[in-house]
Image (cartoon, rainbow, N blue to C red; front, top):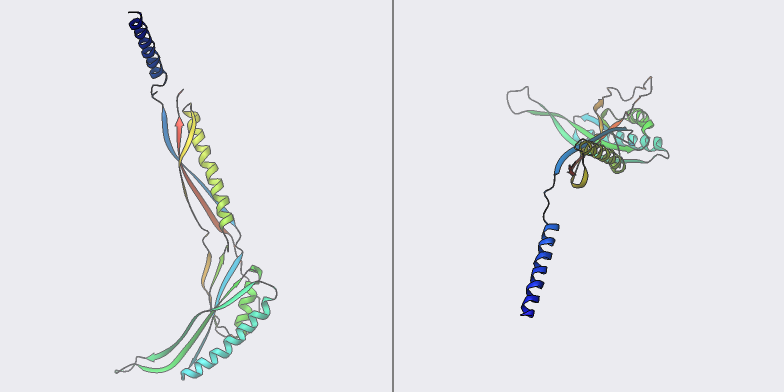
Amino acid sequence: MKTNILKFVLITIGLVLFAAALYHYRPVSNNFTRVTVVGESLSEVPPDTAIVSFSVVTKNAQAVTAQTENARKIEGVLKALQTLAGGAKQEVKTSNYNLTPEQDYSGNGMPKIVGYEARNTITVTTDNLDQVGGLIDAATRAGANSVEGISFVLRDDSTKRGDALGTATKQAMAKAEAIALNLGGKIVRVVETVEGGSTPTPIVYSNASTVANSTAKPEYKTQIQAGSLNVRGQVTLVVEIDARR
């Protein structure tokens, strides 16, 4: 009898403790809410590299003559650019070469080849932005008769993009904290982060100049202004806010 009573008491105590534990650790409904905020930044940075493309265009009734004359002139252009470079970091490469027939369609029959045009395009990449105008003057004096385009770029944009993303992240968090404050709560955690923005868009001047007479000495030095590049950063945050008052 006493043994049965003791067992009953122990079982009762166990059930009471189990019920208390369930009550203590019961799921509690929360007031967590998720919000999405976007932070953006825009900064202007100076480019550190210029890319200029020159062409030597020669024409002749004979293909080999047009080609030979072109080779002679392009050699002079390359020497002039090399002399001007000095200690500046400069890369020169051939970016395009064409030898095409010029045809006369005025007749009633098949078009007639009346000559040939040779076009040799070289691209110069330099870190001396103040020298771009001088490159154009030197190349045209040496025989280049077309400036195809000029671009100003940022060779390595990783640091600038990192700064832009950092600023955008701070802005997004500030927005999230303001929302949490107005809800009378606090940010519990960041659920998701999405990186956006864009790399700096090069400043491009296409077909910047065409020189009619490459032997004419320019009266003035060519002036080229680089300007600034726009670096954009965008960060989207999904945050969880405990809005219990």
